[in-house]
Image 1 (cartoon, helix red, strand yellow):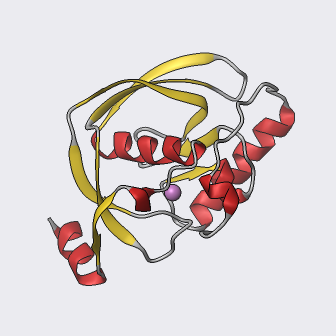
Image 2: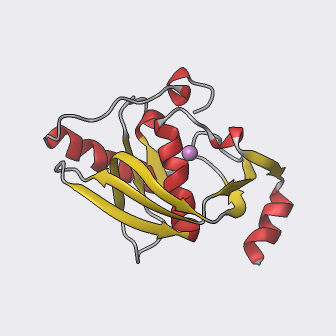
Length: 154
Ligand code: CO
């Protein structure tokens, strides 16, 4: 939870792809589900490593991002965003509409993926966490509950 120093620090790359890493990813998944999030980054559970997960819907499943890098980004989108480290806080954030990401999976295998729209937003939010960047530094306008509801109804 904000405020915490670890949330604003650069995370260290993962070099060891062992069973412990798999266990950590499984634990992160459980935490994300428990708190009804669509993503979670390791520093949010007090681990300063470049590890994040994103799960926006059943179609895309759980995306495991280890040492992720955005290698291409195009367009932009502005929409509401929240963060498990800031319960109850929502704001409008502008991000790239479409991205290409290079990352490693839990076995250390490198992969690339493309994402757009809300999935791209969630991935960019989580990758920011790994560099100590919080969504509050990008909010153009904070939203109260009523404004959020109106946006969700659209
Ligand atoms: Co967050």
